[in-house]
Amino acid sequence: MNRDEALSLLCEYTKSESLRKHAFAVDIAMRAYAKKFDQNEVEWGIVGLLHDFDYELYPTMPDHPFKGSEILKAKGYSEEIRTAILGHASYTNVPRVTLMAKALFACDEISGFLTACALVKPNKSMAEVEAGSVRRKMKDKGFARAVSREDIVAGADEIGIPLDEHIQFVIDALKSEAASLGL
Image 1 (cartoon, rainbow, N blue to C red):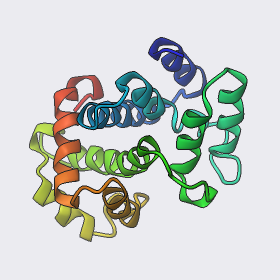
Image 2 (cartoon, helix red, strand yellow):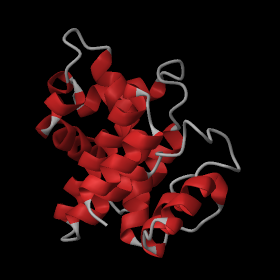
Image 3 (cartoon, helix red, strand yellow):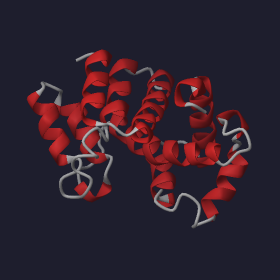
């Protein structure tokens, strides 16, 4: 298991540029949290890259992320990685036991929401996104309506970081590699 193989798998199954960018954003946030928690940055990044790799082929439950997990198992990915990916979707009822699984859940929705926040800024730049404005946007149910605000809040709680601090941490992580995201 290495990053190049994971990236190749992502690109094989995910043709949508926006979904790939989402995978990259979650990868960036996951690697930042791995560093913060003194965990394996490569492994956590791979989980971020691959959490939705099957979504274009299997966009609905119960297929996503179960079909993806089957593909990953056949390719030799560990049970820990597959369980973390299964747990990122609450409807799977797969418990998030490991810190990696909790971090994936915490990074998924907030990464998408922060990207949406950046895209409505004048320069479409992550550099313009501030935690306070993100909190205000979270109250606007019409903005990025597909993003679960409840999951954003629950994710921060699961990793034991106050919501504002979590939002700022992910903003900072995404700013560090904003060019690769087109933000």
